[in-house]
Every structure is written in structure tokens, then in C-alpha cells.
Length: 195
Image 1: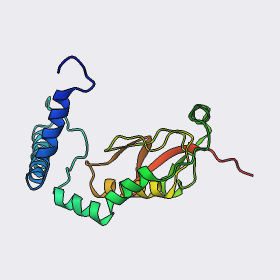
Image 2: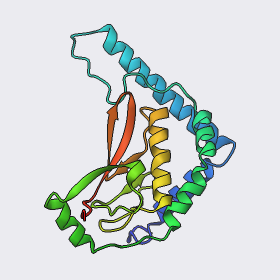
Image 3: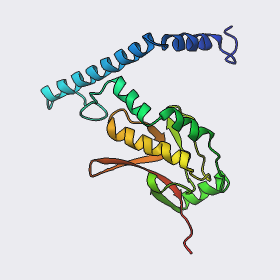
Image 4: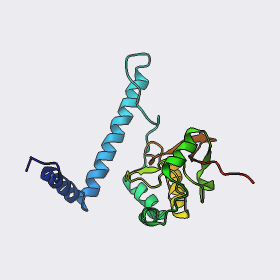
């Protein structure tokens, strides 16, 4: 049982136990309790830092004011934006390779890219690997074109990140910029030839 990592039965059993623990109603309560405790701990750390300025106390990474919304609010947000459909659509949508990944990477290293906001991504060719976390599965590789399903998911991620600072969806390959109290996502795309 412990001679191989393929399959590693202890890991598989651990995943089965974790999956069973997350089933309703107990799983939802466990996650909510963990998130609540983490937010309370974070608030306590921030408070101690404010009460002891100029001391050795370290600052907390992330936003200065942790989100106060509970897990239910986020689930309502997910339902309102039909996140299950969005994620299914983006991973099952047809992807159009415009060029080889090596050729797209070469264009990126030469600086032949534009930083493009989400609203202008449809039909643009990505210069970077785009991987949303969760789930951590690459969505586009350099040289593939953005389609409407992927743009719709990125619009959701932008709205979620704005509504829940500190709980942002991380998208490797996308850059977040904030202006006028609004966070926007940008992706490096290959520069389009102008006629």
C-alpha cells in the first residue's frame, strides 16, 4: 500500500473522507464555521496592529477590512450569476488555436502584446496561459482565441472580486488593476495587425 504513489491509497482514502465531510448539512456548517473563525482571527490581528503602532507587530496581508458577508451571501452571488453553468460552458466551449504556443510566446517576449480589458477580449488571441483558481485547470494556452463563454466567466470573476475584496478569484495570467474604486481584469493578448 505504501510502495507506490500511483495510486496512493492513503491519499485516495483521505479525499473520500474529506468529500463525505463536505456533504450537506454538516459540510456547509463546517465551511461556514471555518471561514467565520478565519475572518475573526484576521480582524483580531488587524486590531492588535492598530492598538500597538510602531511596535514589532506585523501587518496582515490582504485588504484592511475583511469581508463581513457570510458564506450564504457568496452562494447567492454564485446562483445569481449561474456559476455552475459559467464554469461548465467555459471548459466545454470550443477553443480555436490561432497559432502554436511557442509562436505566441515568441510574440510576448518581443513585446508584441496589448493589455486588454475583459470587455474587449472576445476573439483576441491570448499571449499567456490563463488558469483560474479554483479549480486550477488551465483554460487557455498561448495562441488560443477568447470566446464568449470564457469572457462571460471573466466578467463574473471581475464582479465577484469587486463585491468580495479579500476573497478574490485568482486567475493566473490575468492582471488586476484598480482605478476609481473599481477592480478590472486585463490579459496580455497578441497585438492585432492594423490594416
